[in-house]
Length: 309
Image (cartoon, rainbow, N blue to C red):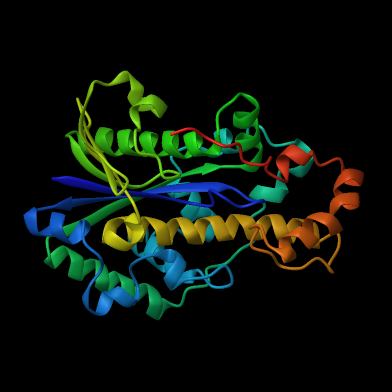
């Protein structure tokens, strides 16, 4: 069987991209139980809810997991490009030519130690011994401009998140060549998903359950797709997706910060979330951004619109 864990990072911030990440694994019956249960044993210290295991100032654990899965990548940028569902040309298509470096200038070096990568590689071997063979990780990067363009067209960031999850599930299905079982984080507390489907709207579906804690569907030609509350805590595979996505989002957010600090070194390091330090960063950089001709739509997200359930 193929099981896929899918989660988002950066749905609610003020600055920076939305990342949606999928991790696929081959699993027997034991492995399915491992994938759909919280991480246990010694590996639990390195696998689980990214909000509890890492922070904006240190998300290198996610880097270590990504490097263990893609050991040939020679830089963080190469690692993200290797995982990206979209090619670089698509990711940069809407970028103002004079400001492409805000998001895609990539001078970084790896930060996770070799020991950290070795530790999670050992965890991957342990998961395989327990019937869960993790085989691939993929991400969808949705930049601020894309989120704002979607909002202008009447598509909320919640629907953007859901549609990215759908794309990743379909990509996993195509790669596997067989139906998959997908475990996804809940999107904005939604209970009924089919009215909001994008890519999956073309497929026939049967509702298995629709509850606050779990909404699950059998989708013809795709497999079983479940949306779980607190999935990154309850599913080891979703937790792994969350950790990798957290690292990738923090890396891309740090590029935005460095781009503006190059003009004004007094600007603080920020997470991009709705906090006083981020608010100060937005305010203090405003004049320089206007002088440089950086469109606001490429810098700050429009306020979230309420959504119906």
